[in-house]
Length: 229
Image (cartoon, rainbow, N blue to C red):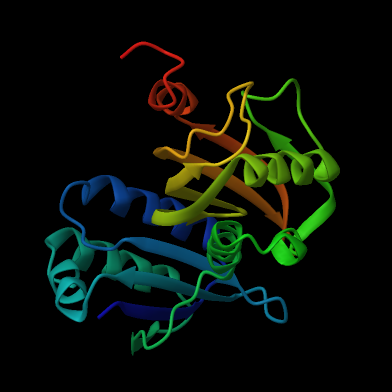
């Protein structure tokens, strides 16, 4: 179970503490078990700071605390604080990356052919980057591209992997379809085909505002008999 530790402190010497944390990161390289760390400053009290540190489990956190480097840095940190820091230990019982949920829903709807709802979480000024298309495209052109794929194939998406960072979500997916209509000048063959790809979505205020697509179009054309194997 993911484990999170909240460390609260008050200090007027945060710049020194910040450099101290950089020192800890450098000294524990290859040893530390923390996977994510974030520091926040209280908007109502500029001397109040909260550090949020994430670990894969409580046991990993205890191993991290047991490192000699951690103990040394902690003592140095206490010396910079106005009072002894307080610790809150939390087992994570719910963890949602909401942008990731939106990206996953897009592929689920695309696979079901829910054209009416497919782009409802897209910004009107959405911009798409797809090397298969000439130049960057807006939302209307992206709709047309999707509808063209739907006319040419009966298909589904499988989400294989997702990662999120800041305002972006990357989805690795597998597409499986049956070639039922004209595609790139090729009449429908009724052939079953597959394709893998990766899509980055950028979010703004919870809505998709930009997308980058990379996929094995050459492999698809080979399956359709256009390119030699």
